[in-house]
Length: 215
Image (cartoon, rainbow, N blue to C red):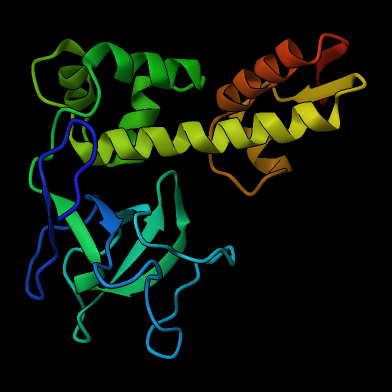
């Protein structure tokens, strides 16, 4: 069985297990460093990257299909999926305790996100998010995993843009969500505030870079 920081040992997903949608999981093949034999099950995500043993994912299906398989996606990338047999997925037996309330709020505010947006993204009520922040309710592993996935996507974009602007230049950002979605520069569905936060981090790394609105 696998373990991760702040979690109790995990158990593999059962063939008839339900209520899995949105749960954090880990790809787990006890016999190999590889996920599956390519001749048996597709082992590549939509983006072409190969799924691997020990990789953190989020389960998209409520229960395994008639073939015993589940669709999973990379945290923060719900459209980047792969289908795997249930026995290659492990979920933690303890679904709470991966972030403190303060860490959870600091994470999403650092990313330029709001409580209403996070609630909508996680498909929960805003009151649930408030309860996590207040410490009234424990933060589910699935929510913490998704939030860390959003942070990873932002980190990768900041690194790419900062590299491109190493010699300086103009970092273009957006005033409104509508403008950001219309431009759709990265194929993302995040708010414009998320992109502005990315722009600020890029400018911080490249002192000769300026930030300006597209219009």
